[in-house]
Image (tube, rainbow, N blue to C red; front, side, top):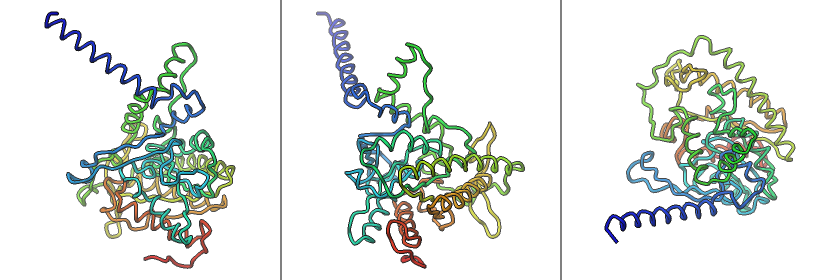
Length: 378
């Protein structure tokens, strides 16, 4: 056999091995053999049955160890093996998901540890159902389509750590919330089958959707703003009506969330979120420019501040009115060292969130604890 034919044969054999390898991975990790209602959950960009190590040196520095990120077969993150033992489920976007905070170090892990201590060592399970990129549109879909499928999951509380994505004046669902349904027809059905069952396409699509939706301030890379970055000194002249309309639309979505939580026999715990998008300098506020884009226009950190404060006010009204609780972390005094970009926290920040939540649970009597007049921790 000539050398040319040998090279061709070798290339062909390599391609066949690669092809069969990809087919094997698709069968193992894809949804081709399932054929069940969980295929609908894949539209929510939920990761299920995966344990991954992420290289985070671009975020935490050249000596940073890889981060371990694990989701169980139901798409939940945490150490609770039995969904029936879960006392609290957390819903939110990337600040709840915490892709680049290792298993065991998320704020849910810290809250679970503190609550377990408060219950004399009896494990008080906290399960993480946050999904990177989800806004309130995605949270509604999660309560409607995903969490009811988890066998035995009947939490006492559902914690909503929400607002960061909605504050960008989001008026409709995005690909990171829920992929659009395909039209009817043979070709469309084939395309849908590939979209819903292909593990490879699912990973690619999830990465692209999150990257397309993520504004610069939430880019999952080291963004450490200094004083010179806070150059915006005034919000847009016409921001007030935009914020009012966005907040009222959020109010309707929040009410739907609260209805779904009540229908599951749980109580809501709504929590506001801190960020580095705006800062106070003396008596004035300054913001980072070009924080998000809405209808082709760029808005700054002070526009974002007005929007997030309005959303927080809505939660402060609606959640207690629905028999739940509201916890304000937006003004809790986090330091830049708690973050790796303008909204996402590192393990240190996650620990502080967990401690503050545990303190608030004690103060408000959440989780079977006796209400306290003041915090048990500084």
